[in-house]
Image (cartoon, rainbow, N blue to C red; front, side, top):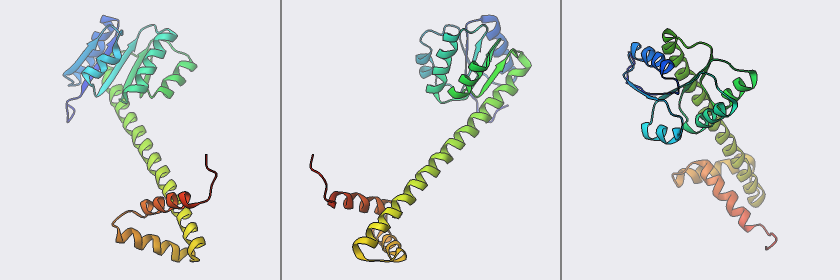
Length: 200
């Protein structure tokens, strides 16, 4: 039984197949399951329900139906497990690009629903963590570049060594109770305003 009750949305136009998924989820201890059979207006339904996880079953998906579900996946930012009866390499690639956490071909059986759902959640969480770490690394790199530019400005304008320029940035940040990156950004912006340029 999960430590926190998950709200799960099942999207399936086929009522028999939807009942297989729902039974698998309920057998696994998930009681907050909503089944939607009509995909028209599904984005609003997702917004209204606010599920933690989405399970999509497409018995015989055509290209348009797959693309609509992939669009949904890009927007909702939640773990999505998708069951399809048939697929091709382009659809698999599109599913991965859209952020579908588990794309299962010809594997809809009640006993497989829970492990696939668990895997989709784990994969989504791992991918989200990697995205956060990548964004933090990019931000840190941008901050370092800004500090380097600010040091360069101080070295040029005040005739300081690199160590002295950094020490001045650090001291200013401490005195103003701000991050060194914020001080560097302010300095770079101010220097940009003071540089002679062409008036537009």
